[in-house]
Length: 122
Image 1 (cartoon, rainbow, N blue to C red):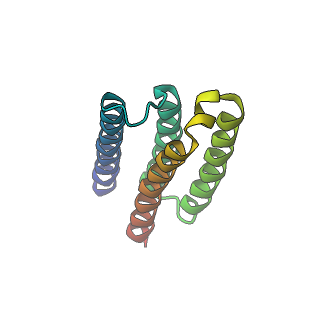
Image 2 (image 1 turned 135 degrees about the horizontal axis):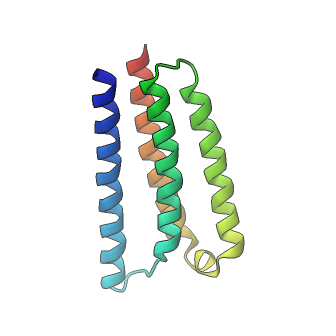
Image 3 (image 1 turned 180 degrees about the horizontal axis):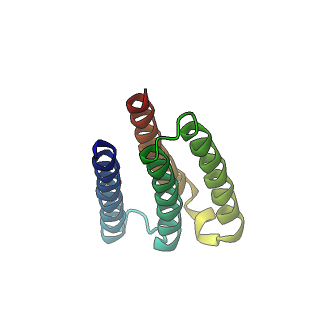
């Protein structure tokens, strides 16, 4: 039961942080600071969500020493996905710095969750 609570808290906190990032993107567009494509943000969000769900499910099933490998695999996958977007999306190339800031924020959130889960496993 404790692991289920940890999983639900982690997922809820991630969704809250993501909602704040989408609100920030909307505010930046409203104030004409920078206009970012929501499709790219949603893609980064879903890749991170799938990564976190996988990690949280593995944590709930008490599979030790696997979380780090799953995390590393998804980081590499996300990085190549960003490269793919950079090549094929003109809008990404025009605003490359804000998109990579967004990528790093999601990566930071993911790293914090993985570190907390690994500490709870021991």
